[in-house]
Length: 446
Image (cartoon, rainbow, N blue to C red; front, side, top):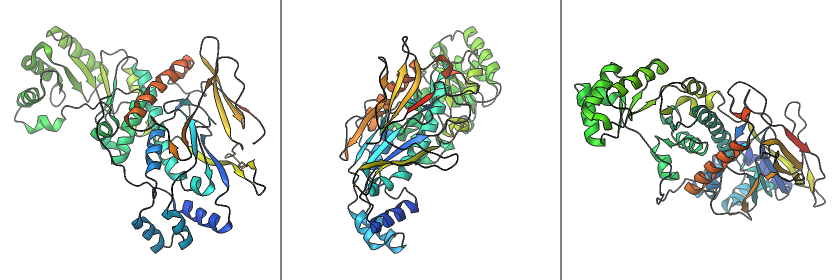
């Protein structure tokens, strides 16, 4: 992480939502139920097929977005002119500001089916209109972070670099870079992510730079002259062995690195390493790229690779592009004024009513054994359990440290600690059940 001293000004987020959020608001305002106290929870009923854990990411982006969740005059005119909502609803939205409470799992935390990841408590009106924005951020960021975590586990002590910007929507690329760093990636190629979140950015040159010049030698000399011998030269534009010999001839033993982006990476990495060593460059690092995922990285474990650059498979969740999280009303103020648990009973989409609290149960060796979820009560601590919920907002006021670069660093540390306490089976790439079970303790709503 770099020392971040730059000012980023996010855009309004209020229309990053679905039409029906506002029509529900209109109907609730007309019915007189919009002000009822309500608790919504974000959770996933299941993990992506065969995954053993998920990684919760995107909370910092949600909180940043909530600070910008205001309706401008132009946006209100659009809602009025297109008859999305009536005049009374537009009047309500003119001064919209979230004034409730938000708590949930720490960003970077691992999670399991029915983990109560985020709780939003406010009036129905305030919580309702946030649904789409919250889910769009958390579902994507958590999908990328979950994939990134598996890749980092497969890489062991070798660093992973996020390089997927050209394979995603321009704003999704920034979100993906942030989520990847939360889950343990060392750096990103995305400059906007570096600007907003203080993460380390890296990059040298593409094949087009080599092709621009009249010869590979001219290209290498130009890059070395501009960036110094610590740079990494791309050596697979024409002939790998010839390029490596040329790179060493020009740069000498202090050449920082070479990059391989095509072909049989296992075989090529071995031959390039042997060649570099013979030429007197034992410290020149080898970075491999080219459609890597956690399985390809694992296959390269025995190869003499120093770093992995990952793009397409990372920003698309490595086969699980969404985390399938939902945002459900679990408790609301009844006609009597008391809070009442509510739950959806649809086949295959049931939810559990009542506000949730969670602990991570651990054994005598500090290894996680269960996800303990209490309905309207905190599960009893058996002596070594770890509370999982963090207060993010109270009375609409955001606590310090949960947005910007500080939040990314905090989440990165939390992820490393969370992974470390899971059973070793969590790092297996073979399909399996969640590495620890979720135990839901029923209770009485309050």
